[in-house]
Length: 172
Image 1 (cartoon, rainbow, N blue to C red):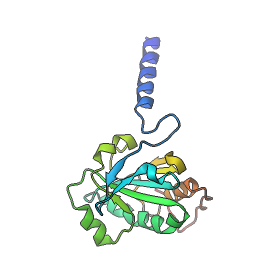
Image 2: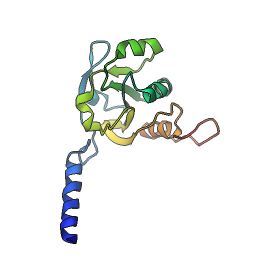
Image 3: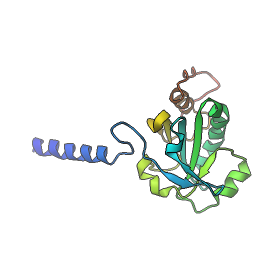
């Protein structure tokens, strides 16, 4: 019986690894999605940058809480090599109106449902942080717009030193 259980676990683990969001070299799956401005965004076009992917929806209260922090990270780190791509998923609202209403300036891709499995998105918001060459760096489900964990993940993906914890920053 123990042998059968070990064999079953080995099969399950192998299946999970083979269907994971990255290849053995930890490269994120490439994608091309339409953007709000009618163009398209392709992940592999940003191999020279760290990339912050945010899977969100207009109806998601946790996304509404998080997106101001994503805008802050975009404004703070875009000149240091960060590309932010917010990917609208499971949405029956109007992402264009939502983004315009709040004045967000990061790239917004729409109809990202087809790539959710590639990026292990169980719910919104889900964040994937990629370092240069689209290498997986971090993956998290958070909604705190001031998350030190998220900012430090972005910083280390950019090759910057993490920030020290202080009273102004709080953890999820």
